[in-house]
Length: 327
Image 1 (cartoon, rainbow, N blue to C red):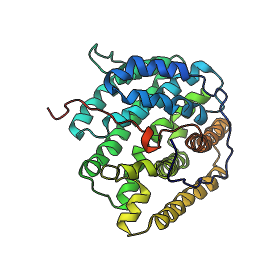
Image 2 (cartoon, rainbow, N blue to C red):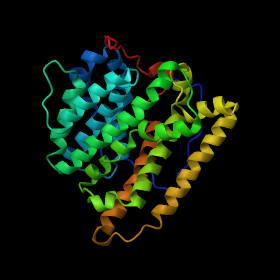
Image 3 (tube, rainbow, N blue to C red):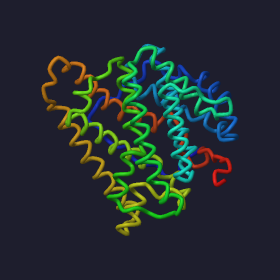
C-alpha cells in the first residue's frame, strides 16, 4: 500500500485541530457498509472499510463534541462519497432520475423496499439531522445536492465517459460543484448546531467564501488523488494538473507548480476576506464562528488526506460494479 507519487503538502495559514472523537464511528461505519452498501457495491465495500471515511467527518468537524450531532455528519460524509463513486459513470438522464428521487427522500419521502442502500442511508441522515436542525436547513441541503449533481456530476459526465479533457476554465466551473462542498459545507452548521439566517448565508461575502471553499478543496482533492487518477487516465480527465498538462503541454512538474499557484491565490483571497469581515449585527459572533469552521474544513481534510486514509492509493481504490443502466 505504498504511494509511488509522494505529493508535497499544500500549505494553509490556518489552525490544524485534531478531532474531538477520532475513530469513534469505526464499528458503526462497518455496520452501515455491510447492511446498506455491500448489497449493491459488491466487493468494493470491502476496500471502503479501510478508507476511514467516517473519520474524515471527524477531522472536518473537530470542535463537534456531541456524538448525536456528529453521527449524521459522519453518515453523510460516507453517503456523499459513495453517491459520487456510484453515479459518476452513469448516463446523465439516469442520474437525473436518481437525483430527483433521492431529493424526495431528503424532503420526507419513504424509500421503497426495493431501493438500494443509498436511499435508506440518506433517510437515516434526514431523520437524525431533523432531531436538532430546522427543516429549512434540510431544504437548503437538498437544494445544494441538486446543484452538485446537476452542475457537477452531470456536466462532467460527457468528458469522463468520452475520455475528453475540458478546458481549464470549464474544469474550474465544474469542479466547483463536483467537489460537493456547497453540499458538505452545510455540515458546518450541523456541527456547530446553529443555522445561519438566510440574510447571512446569502450575503455576498459569505457566498464568496463558500465559493473559495469549493475552489480550494477541488484543487486539494485533485492534488492528493493525482496518483490514483493517473492510474485511471482514460476516465479521470477532470483534474487540474492533468488538464494543465494536456491543455498547455506542460510537464508534470510544471503543471503541479501552476496548480499550486492557483490554489495559493484562492487561499490568499480567503485569508484576506476572513480577516476583514463586514458587520453582521446580532449574528456577528455566529458568523465569525461559521467562517472559522470553513477554515477548519480545509485544514481538517488536508490532515485526513495526509495520514488517515489509504483511499487514494491506486491499489486501495475500489472498483465498482454497476447495474444495467443502459436499459
